[in-house]
Length: 359
Image (cartoon, rainbow, N blue to C red):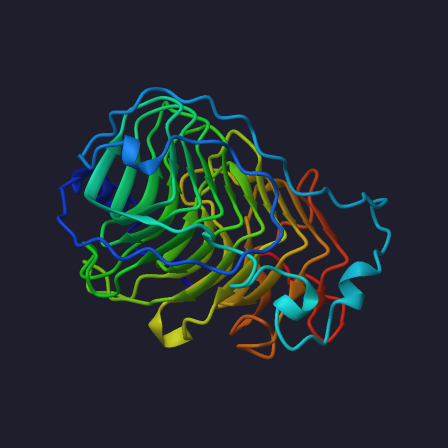
């Protein structure tokens, strides 16, 4: 099946589209509290003026604890966990992330930012209700317990040459029909650089390619309600919950997320996880313990030359299509690639999944 259209064109438009967009901030809301990992301290939101460039002093940001690692299993062995979590009525019923376990939890402070360039190393943005987008030209920036409603190319973007971005416990959404890509909005979190970033416990919706990166740690997120759109090229933009374009130098970990792509096949559905060799060979990706549903194929596996791709203990749900994706579970899986591993992946009815031959 034919894949994405005009990725290089979209990248060029992204770099040229940095215009300030004046927007009206939304009122803050609370979600009911639930047990969560420890957060990082931050300055009060009122300490930062609402300007187009962040102007606060540097704030130390200790790393929050990572999710509890799963017990390792011997290669080729069968874990009982995926089989025990099938035939559930919803991802949350099987212990996967949903609206009750992701997103912001604190009362938010409105910020009329529009397009905002962040240039302060160590900045912590916490408790902000941002109508606009964040473009990160700084190291060790943390966005936590906040909401971003974007009408730009992205919600949060890390520029090349910078590192240490963390986006935690936040709600990232967009305004359908108001984005620059012929009304579409492309990326919730985009990593343009070669460093790893962390996106965890976030509620992500509306964007066409929600989480876009070659290296990083994507964990415990709920990606849902992707909105299809006809792009500037007058074609349906292909949609993915997670997308990687290849050529990565680091490791991409996609662990314990709910990744839903309900886009119809006639409206540009691509994958729930799309590992594509658009800009280079795909390598070193771990896809572990996720609830995955939708797309043309639920998973695109990296294609010819892909190495170090480990797909283990995932549930492929039939909630949109009998085969999880419209055409099947997985395409472009390079079974003979060095370090590639496919183990104990099941449909939501408990059946073991065997990869289709690469094409």
